[in-house]
Image 1 (cartoon, rainbow, N blue to C red):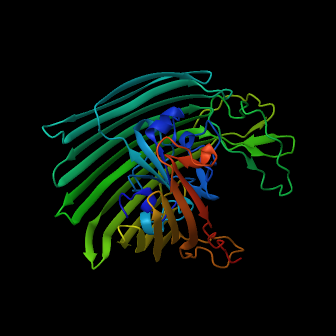
Image 2: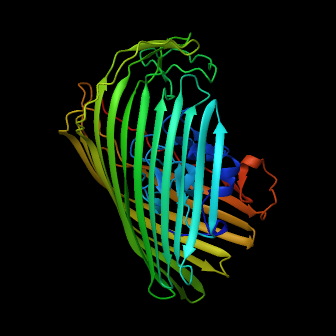
Image 3: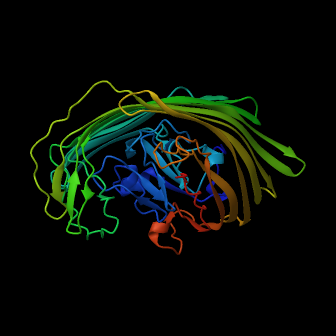
Length: 510
């Protein structure tokens, strides 16, 4: 909602990971790029099919809707994993952000991981060959050109092919990524078009371990050798993603800019594997392979106006924005036969084959709408900045019986979330900041069970509240602040106090 904002003038804790940092780290995915961030922890094992995280202790991207933002918008980025081929910068905003970005599709309140895509700048031609893991080879290309008398037209094409065995036993992975960014930079009108396609194929993919829910006193066994894999060689995962985003800006005059964005994505998932459940302190596991056919269609639209004007000695930067996000999920599942193994001595089970059924009944659909307005007021040549804003968020959702497609229950709620941010800059390279902001998660639907008195009741949205204060210091390019290397990026250090309050527990009356 606030557009492009200088880090030192933002009242929030934001860390940026640039393309150069990502290449120096040899980070192939978003999870690889964020591994050094002290506030971000990957919650999915290496060699898995999903990039999911905890930011300040709250889960992000742990569902099927996808919670990566792309150019600040949900519903564009691939649902499960971000490959860095098309990434110019990854931004991590710590803390809830319902007023800034709207409610996250899965209701995450810990923060926002935003992907800024590559676009044409200086002419570039880069080809890279790579080798890694046990026997994994690949190549990457990155080509950019600008055309026209004023170099107003830009084209950038990136992509890669990788494949081979990973360091994890039995496991192999093949990935293909392609992206195209087109842009026009006129005197008053600017436009960008992004196209992304990627495929991600695993044999014996890693999955997180579950503890047997029937044994509440079961102790967690010691971790095994990281190379061992209880997944069978015949278990597999195939995920294909296509994404498109068209962005537009038009300057009515020097003070007023109109903007509008439209885009969407489609994800197709076919997989056959189980979730290993630990059943004893000695590391025994059981797993029931399941064929899982899933289609995810998402669309997003947003538009608004940005205006800058003065009232006396106060300078205003006002934004009004309206947005709509819509998703539809279709799913079919079928089960195989149970497999027993051990985390310290994995077994080789007889081969099973997926019972693939092409028909996919509707599983869920949702629509998130928002109206927001914000004003950043500044005085003393932007030495003091105060941001006030509010978003009215609507949430509509329908859930359907699995493998049947008939309506189970519906949800239609709304909530208002404010934001207040203050920045004081005593020096050009020092900022003191504070904020109050809220996160929003859709309410659950109480389960329909005999011992639940409010079965199928729609619960209201959950709100998480954050009070935060901190200091930012810019030490300049090439210099290091007096902090551990994992605590700074691009020469900017952040100290923060406070964390979001945990949302209220989801209570079922039973």
